[in-house]
Image (cartoon, rainbow, N blue to C red):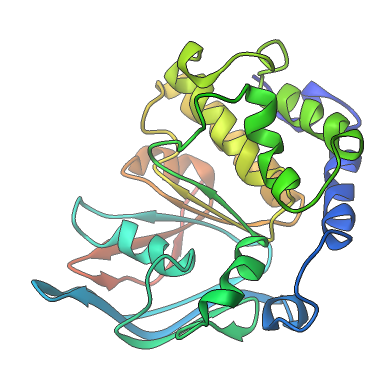
Length: 263
């Protein structure tokens, strides 16, 4: 697998057009997600989160992700990384504090408004969450299809994206026939096909070797150069340091100040 520039010269231009196509798809015209400014993609202020038996999973978390920034989120197991991602993807709500996405307060968001925000995100799950009965092409096309797109309009974009992630010859394969690394790349392709403003990835290199991890890192860097805000949760400190991105660290529910490391 190579990055966007090496796979197809037209990839950048085609990928940029996806945002224009997405804007023409059905959405709620009055939702805060569609109207909010996007200079600041994420802002967490005094956020706490927990459960009845673990009230301090996250404590007084403050975080700002500006548009087009790239961050790694690191920390030991149980530090709260997955919980923080669940707040950002609106799977959970904070116990205390406020969460703002794309300029809008989503701390106590109405469930009816959640889809509008999620259309602006690309989420890469640790367990892939691919649909085994669908081909690679149809897995990637699914978000566009659910948004009301027609296959005639998006087929070329889906094919280009699959080529971009090195699966151009596996478009008809179903997930059970793919390797772990291929599934990971397929999950990434599905997450970014809608040209999201925010990409959140939970351990996206956890099931691949070091060579593939570096290739996936280059893919995320290409997406970031195209304007996406990227947050990757990972145990791989070495990969984070090679990325040159801002590194955040969670320990015992507290988030340390971002620091930049050498690429």
